Length: 193
Image 1 (cartoon, rainbow, N blue to C red):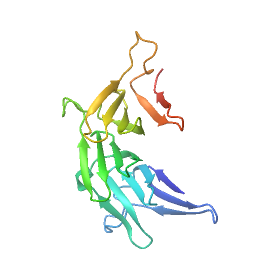
Image 2: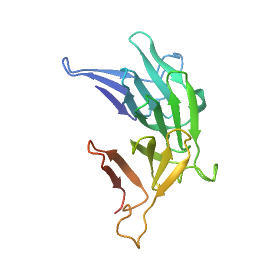
Image 3: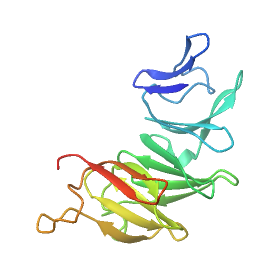
Image 4: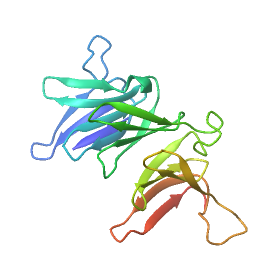
């Protein structure tokens, strides 16, 4: 069991109850990039992806440690990770919007927030992801509601925001969680209402 903490990454072996601590070591390039760990994902191939205050890394295995991935994310706080149906890794940051990484070729595509991109995400702080209908990703932001993004072009195709005059809108624009259940229903948790 991998555990993200603000003081490094921990691995718990449930059988032995032993906890192994992984910390940043400035003299070891294979250590985690930063001790402030927020994003974790084990993908369909069993690869562990780690989001820290200093970008994205993946676990290379025992004795090999971690390797930095997508150098364009260095210095950015990667707080959310999600694998889509195509095997791409969706990356949410605290201050720089989102990105999509194709692990097969290492290609990274950014989805910038407004005002950097006038047609971009509604807010810079990305708090979660959920796949909507085929080819669509819902990106939850912590202040701009939910942006629905086309999976191919990465263009924002719809914006779901709170409207106090309408009873059927999301409760607030600070989204704490977004999830699609097995029947296809989308669930949204907000901060506030």
